Length: 269
Length: 100
Image 1 (tube, rainbow over the protein chains, first blue to last red):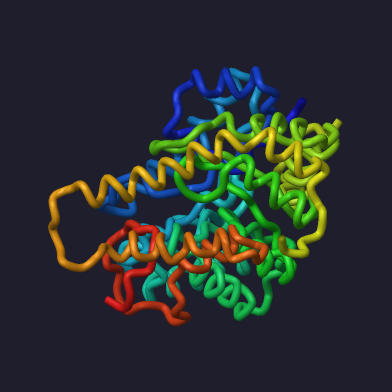
Image 2: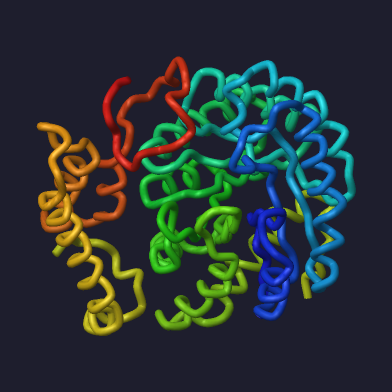
């Protein structure tokens, strides 16, 4: 049972997690740049972080036969400070050229503020200028529905972004419809106390089908579980779905979306 | 029961047999949580906005209409549409407090 976890923050996980994931069938991960749990004091802090994402993590993953790819951006939780965010935006192009960088992400909104939206729009512009895939973080809890709407509108306002090259992550029952109906890809994040559970993810698969949809663990430094993607296979089986459904959601679909970037070279056999 | 399409392959009996105990436990957790709030030392005259929102959302579960998960999430969501001027902090609370 091969699978890809297309959103996980391995920089916050131990090598034991790489081993468990490899044993469960994980062949590739993609790791978006995100908030480290504290605010970095300068763009240099981000520069060091981007070096870890583009050089250290691929080597660590390779020890377990897992291909590691990444996404580069200033995350929305640190986008309220426009000056710092713009300093970070200046160094992003340097890392977009790295051989394992797939695009710009995870960009988006956190509290749906004007400054966050400004930085989101500027990073959509970076993706447009450099012809990059986009991975979008949608806000948490009460802020998600509003933030998802504002984000979709911002992407469409750019005018040059193909929604088929944008993955809107952390969708739930109240946001998945607008994302899929407007042509974007949707990611369901399997998280213990927020976002989506494994059972609800399978409910959404049963309701919306398997097109332009994937699941991920978004495992990070908080309460999270890097094994939730393979657990989805168990829940699908329990519901009477054949293995082709998990293969589609957790292998074929990530291959199709991520394969739009020529640097993504996971064996599709 | 609402007229939702039958997209789940299991029979209704199988769904109940498979998942009832787990969700029975979750329901009792909510009941115990609300009891715990009442047994705790009072801090405000007014009920916390999150608890009030939860109680309102609970009504969705038994109104006989479908798409309960979506409607509960909608009930807990910020209903406004414009970006706010400034971030009140990084975290989310789980329910809409109202304009700050």
